[in-house]
Each structure stands twice: as structure tokens, then as C-alpha cells.
Image 1 (cartoon, rainbow, N blue to C red):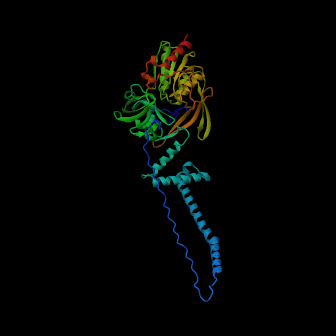
Image 2 (tube, rainbow, N blue to C red):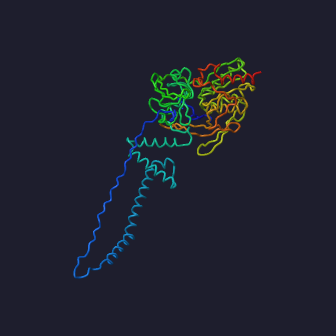
Length: 485
């Protein structure tokens, strides 16, 4: 879940939003060329000993003087000349190091506000200078300084240990913003990323993706011939999928349900980003499917609940299957309408360089009958804000969870827009449910575990007949048995 760039009270949702390297086509063979360093052969002439010619006088004995002279020369070299050579070399190395430090200082140190960097930092900065210079001089194509600097800060974010922290250029950030608004041009699918696998987590009803035959759970292999390994995150993949209405995108996917690779041509179109759908299942039971916790969903949620009250509803099924999350303030506003005053969650993170802890609470008067109880449908694509919503109602003993284990995203992010229209998304906090649980890496277990039939699991939920939806039927049965008079 996330805060907007400038949150009013205080996101990993995506559209076209999150194909595994493992399921991608086998990479082409890479030829490796190695050059053996030149090793000059050593040549050595046979030593030729000279001798004194025989004469009448004996040969002069001069070797002691020769040895003595050699010893004196060696001593002089050792004492005076070699130290100067080594000193000169060390001076050159030190000067080179200071020069590297100076070059790095002009770029990095002022930006990091490092007045007196420690030796370990200087060593790493000199390593950075070496890498920078090597790329600048040896990369197969010419790189500008601007390109190298952009790679540096994008790489800095990518190296963080949270998959929800990354850099977005202006086009990617615009794509993410569109995904949280009302309408955009694309194929109408949500994508998630699980263990380096990009897969379709939801497909909108009557969307280009549904019409082309894409299925929930399909794993991306390539998009327009570009392998998924080339995408750094969900947002960059989504930007490749989107495009002008009427244009085509070629998508190659692996489908686990039939163990086959499928290549589909999808014609992009206008996609409406509806955030919820509401209907009566029986005169006493309402049904609200929350597609995404995006802007305005809380107001639509409250309107649907108010309409149910006028129709005499006694219980409601909330469906957050395939819902990847959204804004914190939308979730808390919805929970505030359902729950009495009390703690909704605790957020623990960092802001302005300091640790912080914040309680999210329900303060307003309950907007629905206090005796109302709920069933919530979840699955492996229910994440982040969906888990906060479901976990809170479960912990207050107001809802039973039905379906499959949820995704397990117990962190929140903030998004900071930069002056050129690019942005950073940064993991900012962990949240803890009313009873103290954090779902990060764990998810929420359903109290009633039910799976959809294999043939139906890949279809958009809107295409399922209610009678064929085994998870929905299990929730209906539970409500009728336990909640209705």
C-alpha cells in the first residue's frame, strides 16, 4: 500500500500491473572469447668464460677489488636510490588517489553532505570512480555522463533489500499514476511480481486482455520480443504493455494450467479503472467486490453500504480477491465506517532520518448497524491494503476469511516525485494489525479454505457465474448459517 506523493493524513499496486526467467525461452548461447596474455620466451646465451692468455708473467689477481666495488655500488643503490624510487611511486599513487577523491567529491560528497568521509567510504568512492571511468571508456557504445549518473541512482534504489523500492522515469511514473485514476489506454490487466516472476493477477471484465484470451496466472515471457529479464520492476513492464488505443502489443506467456507457451496479439483500448462493484446476492446479503483501493473508492464503498441498509440487508460479502492494494487513507476511511472507535493498525518506520511509530485509529461513529458481520474473500493475489482491510475486520471478530492464503505484503511505501517528472517509490514502514501480527512474507490464512476449480481459476472474476464460484458459495453458506436470524 502506499501514500500518494503528498498524502493528506500521512502503494504496491499496478495495472497492466506484475514471467519468470525460469519459464522464459532459453537464452541464446553466449560465446565466450578469452585471450591468452602474451608470454615472451626467455632466451639465454651460453656463458662464455674468458681466460687470460698464457704469458710469461702470472695473471693479475683483480677479483677482490671488483667484488668490493660491486658491494659499494649495491650499498649506495640500496641506501639512496631505491628509497627514492619507491617514495616517488607511493607519491604518485597517493596523488592519483587524491585526484580520484577530488573527482568523486565534486559529484558525490556534496550531494551526500559528507564533510569528512571515513577511509572506508573513500575507498568505496574510489572504486566507484574506477567503475565509472571503465564504463565511460570501455562500454561497447559511448555513454554520456548523464546516462551514467542516472544508472547510478537507479542502481542505488534497485540494490535495496525491498522489492517495493525503485526508481521510475517520468513515463513510468505517469503510467503508475494512470493506474490509480479513472481511465487509461492499455489492455486491462493487473500484473504482480512474485519471486522474479511477472504474472497476471487480474483481468478486467470485457477488456482487451480478456478478449485476446489472456488468463489470470499467466506468466510473462516477453513483450514485443523484449524478455522480461530486461524489466527492472512491474512499472517498467506496464509501460511497455501500454500504448495508444488501436495499436497492438505482442505478449508471450507461459500458462501453468496447460503447461504451454502462448503468444497473443492484443489490441490496446480504453480501459475504465472501476474500483468496486456492488450487488444483492439475496434479499438479506449484499456483495461488494473491491477491485483496488484507489482514489475515491472509500466514497463509493460508503454509498454502496448506505444503499444496502435501505434495502434491508443484514450481512455483506467483501471480495478482495486479485486486489493488489492501494492508498492507506482510503482503507482507513472504509474501516472507520465499519468499526467502532479503536486501533486499526500500528505503522513502524522512518521519517526525516528518525524512527517513528504511528497508530491508525477509527474515530468516527460506525456508519452501519453494529450487529452486521461479514465474510471476506481472499486469494494469493490479495495484497497490502487488502490484507490490512481483511486483517482488521478479522481481528475485531467482525469477519470470517474465506478462500486461499493471501499474498503477504505487510509494508507501505511513499512516492516522491522529482523535479523532472521522475519519481522514487520507497518502502517506508511495516504495519501491524490490531492483534500485533505483521503479514509481511506470511499473508493471511483463510479460516475457511476453498479453492476455485482449475478451469475457472484463470478467468476474470466478473466472468464467473456465481453458482460456479465455490469460494463465493462457501461464504454465502457460512453467513446464512451463522449470521442471519
